[in-house]
Image 1 (tube, rainbow, N blue to C red):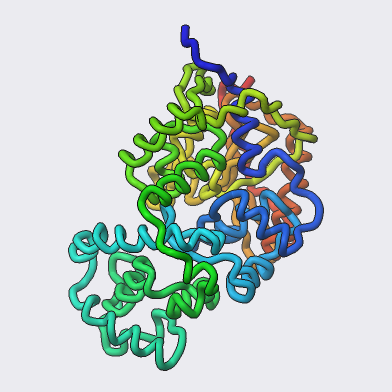
Image 2: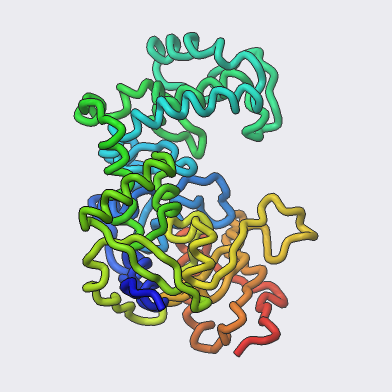
Length: 406
């Protein structure tokens, strides 16, 4: 038997959800300042274009604060400049304070992407760098629609960008341009010095040790407990060997400890944690309110961790041919207190002002009771209002009960 300090599965789930702002009630006001604090607490909010109900970043914030309004996020990004957009594991909204830690990432991405992009994209995008920077310097921000006159246009997939669009993305990924706003969902690119506030732009350069310390220590705080691989993946800002070296020193100095966290299947997993995790009381979770969760939610985007901690196997089936899908095109997990109990295929038909439920699949060990149905309908009506719909409709055969439900 392991001599390491132990976290049982129920405690581990609750501590993890607390770190991701999913234990307190989502009711109540959501001021712009409270929204900024929430995003700081989460670390980042992933951006995604799929809009079956609302885009991922809006769903992530709404599931924690149902009074959230997208205009407040837009103001924080485009007016206050308290937030900015860049790349973690994917395109994300981040606090602007982290910008100085991204300078190393800009350099690493330039080296790492150069070979890949030469294979993936059409030739000629590097020839556009200077022309695009000169144009933006003289004429102001641009979108991808504003550049590339006369260039062959693809069908819209990232793999078929025209050279000037590829150049814009390269200049963004390597820090020479920044996203100053969006027209709908289309990025507006400007010079980085016009977007990032001066106090962050002029921050003295940080060495590799400082970036590694920040990336690991902040990820440790955000995750509550984690393996070294999970720490590395959180920001995806430093290498695995750098995380390993940081963890070794942090354990030696007593800044972190090793603990044994029990997975949903009863198997232990060795994790790193802050020493005070054992003193923390498992947070209470009031009520039985259900939450419909974005597939890109920062708490659940790590599918392996979600399956281990919650016993919930989830895969996005957007790119799976429809006849081969197990569930649906874009299916949302449902959180009840500290458990993922079901998934739902729901879509907003705004032209009809209706939120339509195609299917709901409870987990095998979840009995779909009348009380859960009441909670589901309440949450769906809240979601319908957020998506700009007046009605909620269930299609025939929507409830897909597992054959072995308890």
